[in-house]
Length: 200
Image 1 (tube, rainbow, N blue to C red):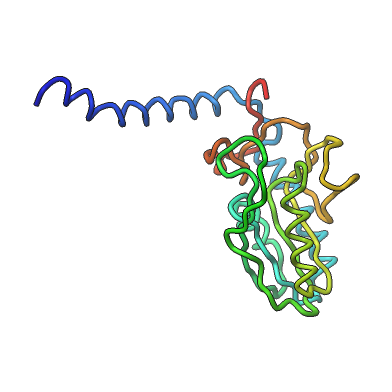
Image 2 (image 1 turned 135 degrees about the vertical axis):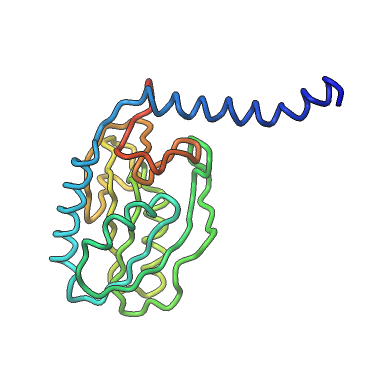
């Protein structure tokens, strides 16, 4: 094997290694805005509020993938009442850091006549995706479409002036967040806590 061939074969591994080092650095340098006990307390409060509102409504819970996955996994076991679960996938970000047009990868259920629907998502930032999802659900006949987000970002650039979710876990500053479902370039949704990228 020539040294040139050896260098070519090692290059992908080097790139993966460098990317992983960068991702680890992002995590290590990030500011923790909400630790696990803080998030757990917020989830308990959200569960109590949702239970009080929806326990007797036979709701359909729709999780927005991928961001809402962790929230759903943590929140749903706290909801001790009958519910149905579905998922949808509508995204403006992908692995990019700025929003683009909404892309429907998995559409919401079509026959929602008379149903109470609760949408779960990780964060209400500008809210374009969540607004589009709720509009689509209402157009499909939902009796009511409510929303629950783990994080509300405090800023004035919402898709709808004054937009808020019906149920909110935490209100945090307008920074680049990751953890508990929120990601940094597709990674760190699994971070134990909610973090802000250093300098962003």
